[in-house]
Image (cartoon, rainbow, N blue to C red; front, side, top):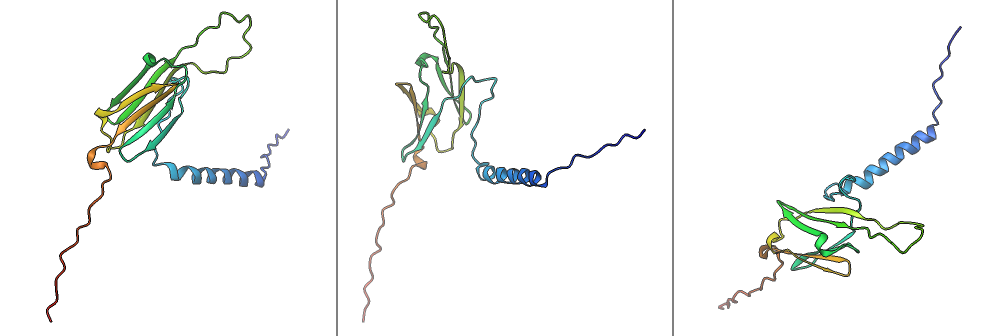
Length: 161
C-alpha cells in the first residue's frame, strides 16, 4: 500500500497579495520609526487617555482627555527624561437600575508616558484639570526659545575722489 502525500497547491495570486501587504506595511511604518510613542502594556492599563500635543513658542502643551477621573486619582511624575500620567477611573455602581443592558464606558487604571525633549524645563511643569481635560504646560528653557536678532548696519565708508 502506498501513501501519497500531496503538497497543497498555493495560489500565486495569494502569494503576491501577501508580499504586497508586507511591503506596504514596511513603507508606512519605516518613516515613523524615529517617533517614540510609548504604548502601555495591556496588563498595566485598562484604557489609555487620548492626548493632543501642541508646540508653542514659549512652551509645549499636552491636553489629555480623562473624563470621569477625580483629580485626586491622577498622578503626574517626571523621572529622568520621562513624563508619566497615571490614574484610575472608578466605576460607580448604578443602584436604581433593575437591569443593565450595556456597559461601554471604560474604567480602571491608566498610564501614559512621554519622552521629554532636552528643551523642556522639567522643574517648571504645571498641570490644570477642568471639565475632564488635563492640561500640562511644559515650559521651554530660555536657550531653546526662538528670539529675534537685531540687524545692525555697518557704518558706511565714504569714497575720496
